Amino acid sequence: MRYLFPALLLLLATRAAAQSLPIIPQNPPGLRWQEVRTPHFRVLYPAGLDTAAQRTAQRLEA
Image (cartoon, rainbow, N blue to C red):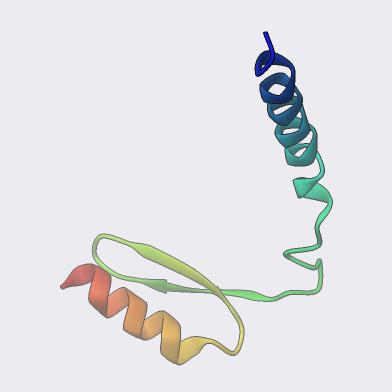
């Protein structure tokens, strides 16, 4: 019983924090997405990361 309350409190706190995650502005509306297609994958990436997207697509197909 002594450890039940702290464990329950921790569980509820993590669930409450998870509810706030969609509010974080990870993908602003003005962000332009581009796409690299391979025979088996679609790699979506923000504009300006062309080199990294190409490298990722090549590694996925390897």
